Amino acid sequence: NYQSSIEISKKIININEFENELNNNFSSKRIKKIYKLKRMINHNIKLDFPLFITGESLNLLGSNIPKNSLYMLDGSRRCIAYILNEIREIDIYLITIKIK
Image (cartoon, rainbow, N blue to C red; front, top):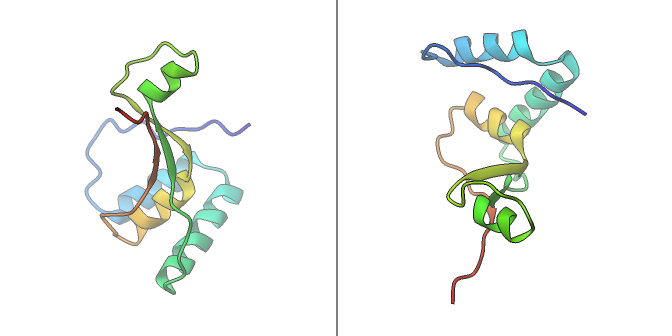
């Protein structure tokens, strides 16, 4: 089980500040994986899309959370690697309920 978060109490001005926050809050093993993904992105290697699910979908499965919320199931290291590469738009997979 990996539990960590970066509490952002100030606006991060640049990538260097973001990297400092990562290095101060994540394990060296996780940082190595993030930088490996960053290099892969730099070499135009296509990665799987991060996976998200809506609160509405989770509620269908028995949860009781705000239906307009969004939760990440997989891909946090990839998202961080994209940020480090200053890529502002990425494709994602989104699990949602089909409305008829």
